[in-house]
Image (cartoon, one colour):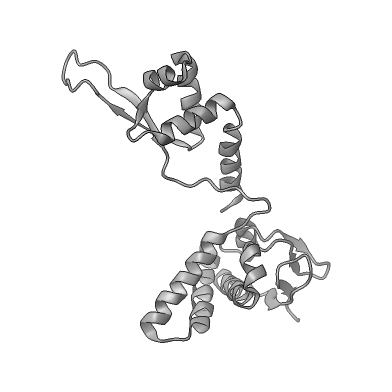
Length: 222
């Protein structure tokens, strides 16, 4: 999740702090079919104009999807305008502070298991290879190690010697319970990112320390 996506998700979650807006979101979410403004207004006993305003706000935030339907069954001239209907959006809204990326960890782990089952390669070796490959793709796409570190939420900080300390681990809870496996995947992922981005001034190394990610981006020896 990049910074813009995180900001958008936080804005969406914040929009639910309004009691009426939250009631509308819950009402639409619990409906088996898309809901119109008149139905929502009647269900909550709120003026239609007020309901329309808040429904549109929820849609702009990405919490609701919209569609248009003629519910009378009539078509052609005189059938009237289609009604605007709302339903809960299929996309997920996830906010964590600091940023976590458990979906990425899950993708790497599942891909490794599937490939291990298919090829007979040991699961840990498969995870290392999959992580490097995925990181390489990220690095090539972003064109910069720093850009990937920011987008995944590592919170890089200058180490005072031309390298970077990573103040946040995007896989923190998993790493607490499965340190060896997750840290190995994390290291492999960033090695792949550096290779894909063509990073030559710095190297990725395993250097755990309290309060930081287990990976350190060190200045390469001259």
